[in-house]
Image 1 (cartoon, rainbow, N blue to C red):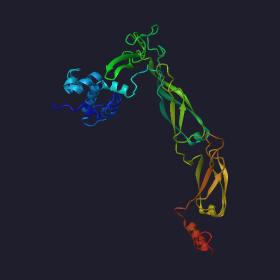
Image 2: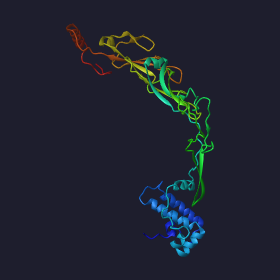
Image 3: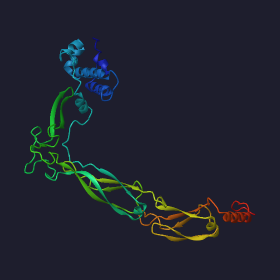
Image 4: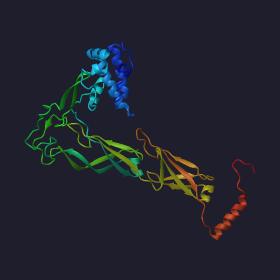
Length: 360
């Protein structure tokens, strides 16, 4: 068996170190080598070595014996030193010494779980708002025992293990002194009471799963991916806590005519060469119905016209976006012989195409 190192060397202090020096050195090394912080091989053995050194040097009688007789004198005070030392459970002492919480509070009321669902609407419904009914499955308080968990006519009794406190106290004597560790009662799980006659419907849980229909109001202006919160429609709370919420994620169907861009909508208006060259007046579809649009002569491919206040309503302020009408000049894919002849005559009369602003 390897010889033990000098305790003063283990803690890295001089032989005339004060009690405060010893305590300060131990704090530093115990934190450094504690397995909660150091996963390297050998850290646990070093931690035990540091702990053993502190056990001796922090006690004036043990320290005096060690200074006079060495390890043999120190071991006379506590048998075989730290051989067979039970390292488990030292975490509670370490937590208290370094300021970690060692108490458990009685379980408080908790809010129920939130539920999440998806809903699909049309572009028109985003523009004008709508209401949708959805079916949800949620946990509610038992309708028979009203969430108490007991058989109707009976009451829960005080937990005999914790006397109704929901906590169990355990006092430990350690090298740092006397510590009281407060933990959640394992018998009542922190409730402070136990159910001797459980409800036959919920089997003592106080909860049951039910399907419900709820109405979702979707405001005008919501976009794809928007989330709507419905307060208090989620799972029932625990220990008298409030119910959770329901979160609805909105998906908007792709429209056959319009594309949304923020609160504006875009519509591509197909016209032919003659309409673009000569100008025309056409009926344009909007979310509010068809409107007339004048296309001036000489309009080019991609030209955009703006229809004010024909887009999507702003979600958090008054007003609406616009509808943008983009010209799409359509090239015919096939021509009759007469059409081809007319286009050829037109091409000959127009001559080669020129860039804008180029002088003839």
